[in-house]
Length: 62
Image (cartoon, rainbow, N blue to C red; front, side):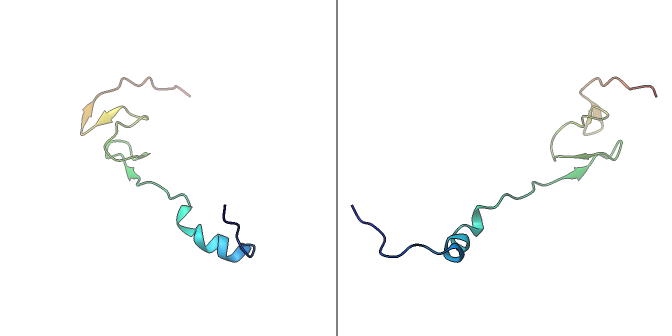
């Protein structure tokens, strides 16, 4: 079995792994209430998707 001749330095190792970082997914604003949501999903705050209520959300009275 092959063994590396020299140890891989921290810099080389980190340069190789630069593409493995996590990225933030796309986010949009709900046209009904303005909350930040993921695209093509019903809003969890107001329950609307494409101007149609698909989830019944109970409002908290403060």
